[in-house]
Image (cartoon, rainbow, N blue to C red; front, side, top):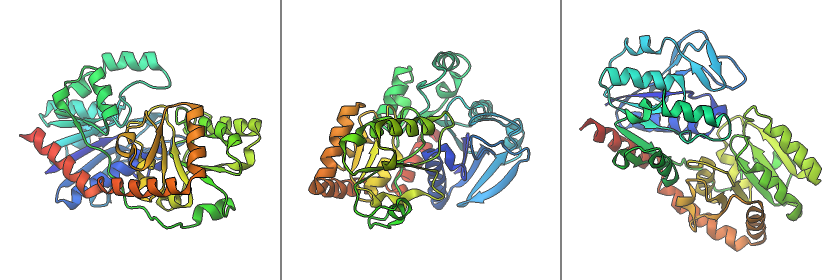
Length: 378
């Protein structure tokens, strides 16, 4: 098949978060299965940098990626005025895959595919239900201008049961919603020491968070837990979302007297798979997460996970690699204390999580995605 991906950002835009690794891995695995994958995306790489005025084409893991001219943007929403022109210049795809929601590139791409009778799959990447900011505006746009994007899709992909529930609540037909979890890469299960050397730590208990530093990720709950966790350190690895969360966490850590034990490391220069095994626990107590790649990657590394019940990955790891808690400061603190105090619990959860993660190896997930494409082409 010739498959078109349309996404608001693509590799090397790691600051966009976990979806970048998901998109790149999925494109790579589909190409390995013999499909031609064309990726259409903006030229945005960071939220604080402008996009390029020039369109360029590159080969990334056997996929052809077109980084389109992006003269205007608002955060990660880039305007790509030449998208329709370039789509008309290349062989028409058999099927398309729209990633993300409320992005101009996805909306325009979907309109082009509908006009040219190319079936497309829609995957919101956790963005479907309005969250955090500008809720009234998002709801108004979803009901009017943007409604045609999900409703015109031949199939809608959910990464978890939580995301499927969001689609159902919006009135999308149950028969068109298909669950395809994110794939999980292999991660080293032996300590690399790279994170502990960076922090100057040896035997001190270490709690790790990996992901965007943003409101709603439960990072304030982790900082609030530290006064009750003697000697434990918290390492936060990931890019700031530009809304002041890093500054707020530093202020909170100072007010609680734990500033020396909270380490905000920013974006790691490479995929952080080697970091997980340096920690006793990976914590992801998010308010909402359609999947939660960091938790799955930590499980693959044999590291026990603490995750909130609002994360899609909790469905996979509950009692099989993770302690699942509510989005509640006391529950988070008590679960962390339990994990740090019980090496045998950490060992058993780590072993179970590694087994669970194997079920989501990328070749298997790509096979699931291929079956979805073939389903919509029937």
